[in-house]
Image (tube, rainbow over all chains, first blue to last red; front, top):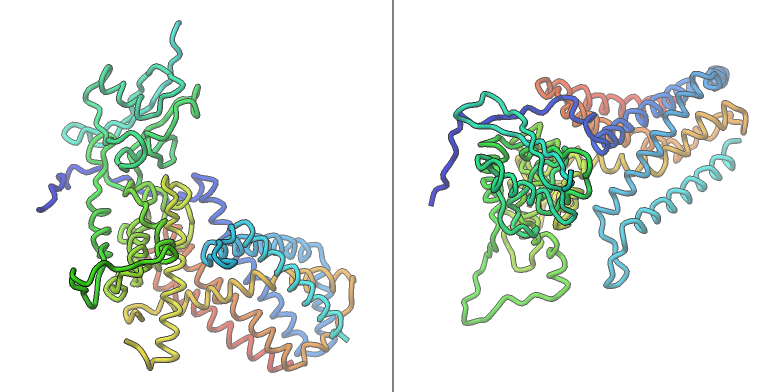
Length: 137
Length: 247
Length: 111
């Protein structure tokens, strides 16, 4: 049995504007989440530049570190940190959706899975910090 | 003035007369227990019989009455006037679909996409009826049960910006439906549902997540899509790194 | 079943791995590189970067999130209406990540 199709010439097609992500809060937050990856990448490029300076000698390295103490760079890292934290948190929320975790038969609720991820993140951060302080000299 | 009223601003489009949609305002009685569908039915029965829209069960199980209510895709039988009163309510046809007339959209693309994921049990080896039923444990049922609850209301397609930008995208409901069969222990047809793992299948999705937010039956198509991405990626890496043992 | 038709799982796999690395490790490194050392909360001669396993760690830390960015940014540019030039965008994004991979390896080997 074939479907009766409407007259295609009379159908009205509404076009989606390129600014669709400004029309709704959830769409805007989605876009911010996606753009957080830009700031993560930018920070890593800065880190890479610092490592390059290290390869040029200890003086080049400390000169670069000095530059990073300027207000402009501090502001950049503050913005980058905020976006990185937004990436982390939204990533942990997404992980809770993608990976249904179980204790025995029972499904663990998504807010708890997210919280577990945040806890793991805190532990990992402390471990990195401790390793850095122990190894730096 | 005795009875309280509320204003509905409703999209009108008459294909034989109009070049583009317009908006018509109707002032309807405000009742505490009315939903937007009740208001539309009042308009059609008492004020303007030319208004066209789809509806059926008026209790959230048939999926017919989906429309944009103040810019959000909703079942109009589940959108209470009291949640908007005294503000005016904008009622528009579901976005991302072409308009046939007034609030009625063309769902041909949606129907084609549902069919394309082969939404039936596919067996490699059929069991004759004499051997009895296919048995399934409660745990096996739980693995796919929530994805069986879709009422094909298309709210998820209206909420999905990817579908709005790319009409070829398979879309939330169709992928969730395919996932429902892939996860059913009785099914052996995963490799026939390749369309899900192809371009314009799961890979167009950027996990905006709005589909699951608007779904009236809590199907969570976003979860189905992301889990399909993990499964497909695992299989892909396995087939590349360990090509032996492939069926 | 492996889908022959698209290589997308490769990019998505890298995107995922990069997302995990970025989520767990990038914030603390921003604090160390962007605040702790420049503002003098602690000192750093850079000596620890000469350890081979620290270099390996840094390679993973820097390179995987580049693929995460490439995949995400490519799709974002598509979603904001630049679909017409999407082949060019793919080259710029994924190509950028690939170039970044080699540059990172080169710099780490130089230290």
